[in-house]
Amino acid sequence: MEPPRRPSRRTAAPAAPPRGASDTRAARDFARDAGAEGENRLLRARLVELAEAAARNEALLARTQERELDLLRASSLAELLERTIDGLREAYQLDRVTLLLNDPQHEVRHLATGEHVGHEILGHVRHEDRLDAMALALGGLLKPWLGSRLPAEVVRALRSNSVGGSYAFLPLPRADRRLGVLVFESRDPARFTADLASDFLAHLGVVAAICLENAVNRARLTRTGVTDFLTGFHNRRYLNARLREELARAQRTAGAVGLLMIDVDHFKRINDSHGHLAGDVVLKEIARRIASQIRSSDTGARFGGDEFAVLLGGGRAGDLERLAGRLTAAMSASPVALGGEGSEVVTLSIGGALAEPSPEERDYRTLAERLMAEADAALYRAKSAGRDRYVIAERAVR
Image 1: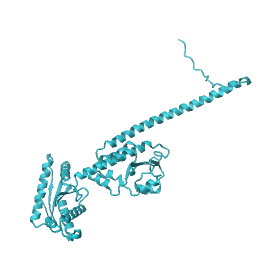
Image 2 (image 1 turned 180 degrees about the vertical axis):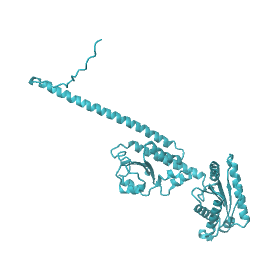
Image 3 (image 1 turned 135 degrees about the vertical axis):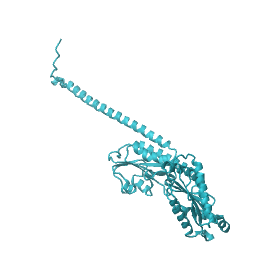
Image 4 (image 1 turned 120 degrees about the vertical axis):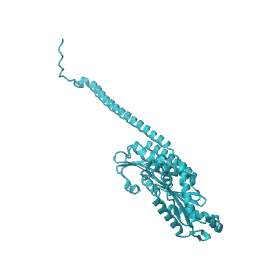
């Protein structure tokens, strides 16, 4: 067997340029070839960089398109806000996402609250009355602004909620107005810099604006269907739906649901004496005073005519009594101004009942009807006892 050969210690030396005066042309050729080889290496490196950048952009485009489709699939304002705040934060691995809205009447917040959006989401959605000044400080915000050094107007707008690092401000344009600004925040100062291309973010902002406008319009239509036009309170249809939801929740948590039925004392006399317009004024004032006494988690509704109702999730008999006492006191505390028709002292009769669903309960509709009937019977007893008072049923409906 032939023994293995020892590796040679000689190494290949780089080619040297030809020597001698007669080889001047060859030296020039050698220098030219060496320069060309260096340029080729630079070109190959540049091509690799471009290919890597193209791959990154393609991945970013795919991810952005996926996020845009996710926003477009949102079927409600609540779902859209969740996908915007939490969905985008998780998808882009951000530290914080904030939605600043040009919404002086806080309509979006009211609509979102009506759809039971949680505080953990609503805490990142707010109206910003300095939005125009902030946009001006960011160069007009006609396109996304990226950077880490924020103007003072922007720092004030973000308040103490900023995480520091770097930011991307995405305008939400619709027609000739700006719905708001979507703010991405990262603790990494190099995440968003002014030299980065922002085309994808600009397109995301446009899609988010379209989705937000559509979701708000749908929420308005939904609210119209479940809202009493005169008082702005929820209507009977909404109350029935919420009552069944609360009963199901109470069953899961072994809790209770409270219901107050409210009737305006001698309302027909007000209409006969002052006219129906004055009666409308009274109904709106009653709704306002009821709303001032209930919690945000409670549901106030106009049940029909001169009847109102309040639904208390997680209520107890003591809670019903305390709220009923506050409502009667708030109503009789001062007369209701009727405009040019003077004023009228208005009192309320209230009946209340509590439901405690059993673990076996499945027919929430029937249970809701029994709860209403029990509260209505208590209301009848309050009116029979002289009005301007409340009666709470002694036993819970099960």
